[in-house]
Image 1 (cartoon, rainbow, N blue to C red):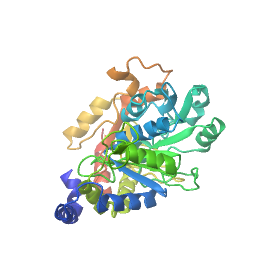
Image 2 (image 1 turned 180 degrees about the horizontal axis):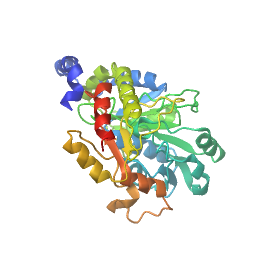
Image 3 (image 1 turned 180 degrees about the vertical axis):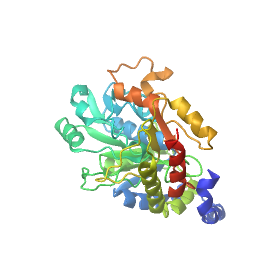
Image 4 (image 1 turned 90 degrees about the vertical axis):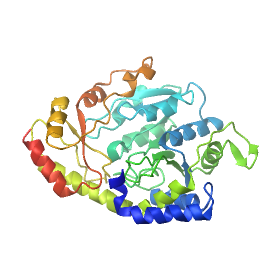
Length: 365
């Protein structure tokens, strides 16, 4: 984490000192300005900063329940190939996660499978822009409109990405495509805090007000609690850190894109399948994920050659102990990906030259 923040260290220290000297650590200037700046980036009317990405999704769904749009037992369609937080947000609200398999090329939700999953209790679809690749297409939009469903984006990994087609409000930036979106500022994200953080985005005034109240103990004003809410606030220090790094987000995304293209151009090994680069959209490469059938051997080989790797994600939600009783249909693509995916280094200080050097090692595997 220290390496990732090294380019901004002096500015981060100055921003932290400013907050400390000001003496306001919650609900003050830095949080307000961050919300304005990130709402402008995602082209939404509202941004509500919260404690983390999971809470962002939890609060959206809870707000829809408070507004009478959802109730206990209603269903939300979620891609099976995602971090478990996407599913936790649904079940935590007394809603039923309905798992949808994913596409081989995007590794994102397969909108061609949606119709078969819809029941009278379906209320929303939660596309996940996994690894920084937008999950938004005409069929997803059409299904949502035909069945009067909300689209809640899990934008935890894709801030600054752009879809190939416009969202509900005519914009292309992920986080502003659907009815609402949640984002994570976990330290490893392209825009990462120095701790936990997240935000909710929407153009719905009533939803935004409800989320803001729920995140602050359920209060719409001091000592007046209209909901049985939570404490899900973002603090001023983290907001200040994020405002510093937000100024460099575009460059961060461009650098990751250059690294991803370097990998894809240089890796030439029949045992290693590289991710698809889509020229009609802008991916921001939170992770660069290849697929290898003999994953353990591949990772051990790279480790022996000084290259660290990771797996995102080795165990899909429906195979987690906490969801052992979750009913679901066949999920062949998700399960195959879980056995094969390997994340290569892509975050700072990795450069395109580093990617070429790592690709040479991979090509000898």
